[in-house]
Length: 162
Image (tube, rainbow, N blue to C red; front, top):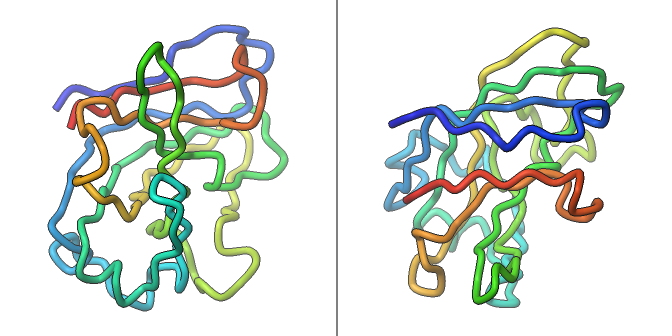
């Protein structure tokens, strides 16, 4: 799979760079070598307007991205900047959800779960996972985005081409 990087622009406002090295849709977390205790206990899945329990997620597909993150100048590195979206008609952005797993996470019950230490100019490779229901998504239109709630000029989209 070719590496995918977000479009670069407005360079002075970039605090984190990332590269999607691989995107894999697994039948369930176990197939991806992700244990139940590594997944958020309740997963918000706004695409369908539901909350998903970890028990349900364990029997559902999971999208795992292998991502390299480089801190350009961020004081607080937080994995929650990464969101999954589907681009609909007229490029309408439909939020699929937030990550429910990441390999650097220590305690899913901790409010600091999504934070990770990364000094400026350092890089880390990590795996990030999402609960996903392929029955209500067009897999070919799924993108990884950052800064979803920020201004469009500061937001990047990477087509995962699933």
